[in-house]
Image (cartoon, rainbow, N blue to C red; front, side, top):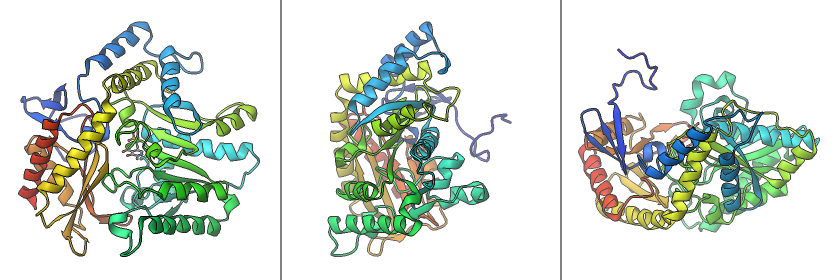
Length: 439
Ligand code: PLP
């Protein structure tokens, strides 16, 4: 018996005892190719010597200093590095320990910004159906995964939801991408008008949807249209790049590819690459200045914010990505992966779509390619797929079913940025084998 309160106590887990390159090894020496980076976390793979060395160096200097007493060089350097590369005027970086904390900070910053401006009526948040922003109560309140929200509904602040940008399912026949994006922007604008523009604080969206929709990118003009609507009504735009940011799409910030800068941006996962738990919220100069020149204080904080060792690890991750030109590899290997998957699944009746950006790749399964009917409304397939993949020595991240707010069965692939062309071919072959064993 285990005393650990595992996330799924009914399942017995193997023990991970070693990580090397793009693989993890269990207690029996079995190798697992980490094609999902856990949950889009391990962007440099496992056991990276530079990151380990940076952590050791930081531990020898100072492991942790509470952020109300001190800053550290690692924290300052990481903020310079992230802000220096960020789109727009996202100048200020607030470090936390993970994605949900980054989103909580974003929601509270948006609210406090309006309180400081005297726009105290602005307390409402709009997000999208089929979204995930974290499991803490604020993040869950805005999230669009009904299954995760259901038991906790009495604890969640009311939030508003509009349609996700899901071209594979929702773009109408004959409708151009431009027209589809405009339709979704209109829907958001209608929602703002319905609530009352001076009551809406922010619109929150994942730049590329991760877990609930399998690496679902927006159509090209969507984010620009959404930005315009938000600006027209003084509503802040919060982008969640907890999964899709930090190089996963081949760009350090996924929204930069769309030429859009949000007012607040949340990042995590690939930031620490799994070597340390760390997330961050980037805030625009306008928002930061409003607080600094107003109350002078952000009414929020956590014990581990700006953790020196976590910052040192994240800084090392950024330096490796830059030094080894890994974003170029992400773009090339991502293209290769999508091409290979389209080839191997060309004849498979249950594979409806292969999509994504960079090394953030999704495969959507359907019962029937023609009508795109959902493969498994009971949500059983994804668990079988994950088990079978592990038996084949492959780690992938499946999700799905039809629960209010989530449509479709998907598998998410997010291999480390260091993977080679041969690794990509192996991942595609192993996934092909796995899918054909269960479908
Ligand atoms: N936002 C997105 C888009 C995510 O994918 C996740 C986690 O999967 C979160 C927020 C929450 O991050 P964490 O699990 O680090 O709290």
